[in-house]
Length: 214
Image 1: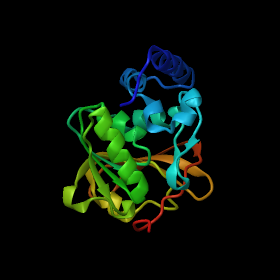
Image 2 (image 1 turned 90 degrees about the vertical axis):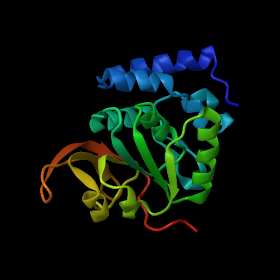
Image 3 (image 1 turned 180 degrees about the horizontal axis):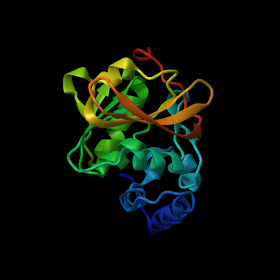
Image 4 (image 1 turned 30 degrees about the vertical axis):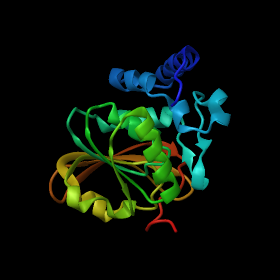
């Protein structure tokens, strides 16, 4: 069982104040970031820095994104309750937990089995229940499509075609695209064939890879 002490809650409140200073304006995003215990998704040795605005290493040479990135991607999604949302890259599960707080029909895919297994245990301890899949994020989840929102939490060299086809007309995908440095894109599906693209600055994510990890 994870402890969420007054110290943790105080650190989250300070984190949220810092997020406001960095341009996070969506009140629901700030509320959720203040609610989700980030330290529960990290090894206990990182407890003293869990609420600093930094990416932290986790299993399988991956990272948990810094809080400002999680908040910004979530803000870009423009979430509403009961939307069908696909997350590519479960990772530690922290971003998943942030999304889960929105009362969504949430699906999340992870290619690293060790990360998938550890996230399942964390979700169970926190009593949250997203639909989790061990698989290839490039392929999305065709059997559960279409989605109102798709969030990619790793750096894609290009936009996966399968994910575009699984997005509803009127739906939004947020995805960092590029090699060493990525541009944060928000793609809105305007028609069956047309997408509106917005660009929101440079980020650095771990790379998005195909297939399940062995």
